[in-house]
Amino acid sequence: MIGDATVSKPVTPGEWNQVRLIQNKGQLTFYLNGIKTVDVKIGSPEWEKALASSKFKSRGFEDFMKVQKGKIAIQKHPGSSGWKNMKVREIKS
Image (cartoon, rainbow, N blue to C red; front, side, top):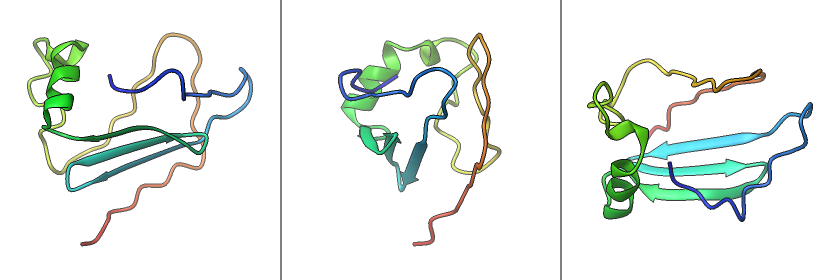
């Protein structure tokens, strides 16, 4: 939805990408293989613009990124996908 493909450096197929995703008080920061690719405040004008031009603007996604607590979902795109060594931590403030 948001990101700069010029800094996104995925590894070659068959190797594992490393992702670090931090959401702290609405600030969303995403790292791919140690490179920060996204740093945005949820609800900001930049966020709302990206949301309006994404698939999440359509029906069925009315609560996208609006629920403060709940379950975590992992999205799989066509093709093979795998996950390993996943860790979820709550940031205590």
